[in-house]
Image (cartoon, rainbow over all chains, first blue to last red; front, side, top):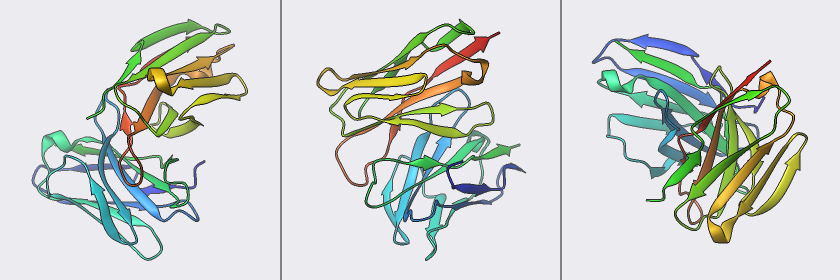
Amino acid sequence: ETGVTQSPTHLIKTRGQQVTLRCSSQSGHNTVSWYQQALGQGPQFIFQYYREEENGRGNFPPRFSGLQFPNYSSELNVNALELDDSALYLCASSSRQNLYEQYFGPGTRLTVT
Amino acid sequence: GIQVEQSPPDLILQEGANSTLRCNFSDSVNNLQWFHQNPWGQLINLFYIPSGTKQNGRLSATTVATERYSLLYISSSQTTDSGVYFCAVRVHSGNTPLVFGKGTRLSVIA
């Protein structure tokens, strides 16, 4: 158990819809990162949040957006879903004192039909 | 960007056997982590090891930063060791992201 929780665990959406995924970070961790893991691949960095602001972004289009709340929990929003968005979405938290060691949640498996 | 290559891509072991997984990276890194992803998708931290050697029970890891590789050793493998093992690195400092390899899929059979 890492202390990082995500919801929901599974989700099925239709192409063109919007989705919101949620993450609660480990106690004491104020930095949250989101990753997308396609089948058979390693996780790919989407973006990172620190103090409620985006603090780094990978090669993902603007329809991927996020929020971080004062309690350090976070949301990932994806608009205009495409079939290729089907993946496992992972949230990771880390502390500013030890930014280098990230702890991952169990993930949300999104299927877009 | 940095390239992370893991080998072998797939590995099948008899229970009790030992194995070595390798991670090569193309640039200097200041962070390297090994993860185990279980069949339910959970990524579990095994080691934070930017350099040197660490051991935790049946698992140990060595990173030779100057030669840009890391090794994960699994001894006396058990069926519960099955899953995908990922190496992830971070270049520079601060808010640069972890870059993952494609993983080694390990199957331990009884």
